[in-house]
Amino acid sequence: MFSVVSPDEARSVIHSQKAEISGEPKNLEEQAISLVGREIYEKLVKGYTEKQWGRDCRDLPAFIIKRLPVRYTYDNNYFNDKYQGIPVNGYNELIEKMLDGVEVRTDTDFFKSRAELLALADKCVFTGQIDEFFDYRFGALGYRSLDFKTEILDTDNFQGVAVMNFSEREIPYTRIIEHKHFDCGKSFEKTVITREYPVAWEKGKEPYYPVNDEQNNALYKKYEELAQKEKNLIFGGRLGLYKYYDMDKCIEKALEICDKEFSI
Image (tube, rainbow, N blue to C red; front, side, top):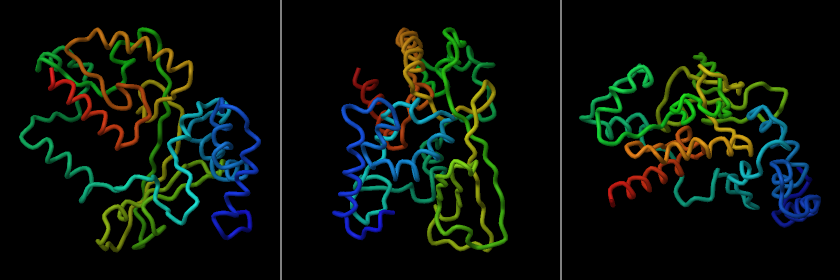
């Protein structure tokens, strides 16, 4: 981007651009510039983030962008973790084994059978929307939703990788998933791709991402206080805890809750 070829040269350019921000970043824009400078922010972060969240970067909390590491190396892994990947044969097989021998009901509306389901056990885990659980007593929390458009293409390889992100604001989808690349080593004559379109959330739509701005976090605190009074219920997951968890952090939190519950 900067007509440089070495990490030191890149670091020098970015360091000079980062100087634009002084003090603690107050929003996502300031946080991003303080990490990678204005040029990378405007080319790679701003458009993607604003279409993803439906808000100006200056109206989003700084912590969202802190999840992404900055490296001056040729390491193209997403995070700095020693081990990165997905389960062999995908999450379906993992979950099927976890639920082996367990009664599973699908296509079931929890709220239509609420009393019956909560009576099945001494303690229940709820991973749906915490505000919906309490009948939106204090109002609805903010979420972002997604529309998925899937195609089967008459080619053995569409984009060469599992996930391709599109940072331009003008392109309405944020990424294209080519599913076959998650299952390495297998060959198929055709391929399946899915485009992800961020959309505004409303009741009846699937809530994918909590909007953890100041207003929504304050509202969540009210629901959290109600949840703490529910002695026979455990709230978990992105929706139950109203937090933008990555998969590893979600699993870590689940294990923490297990340790707590089974140590009593």
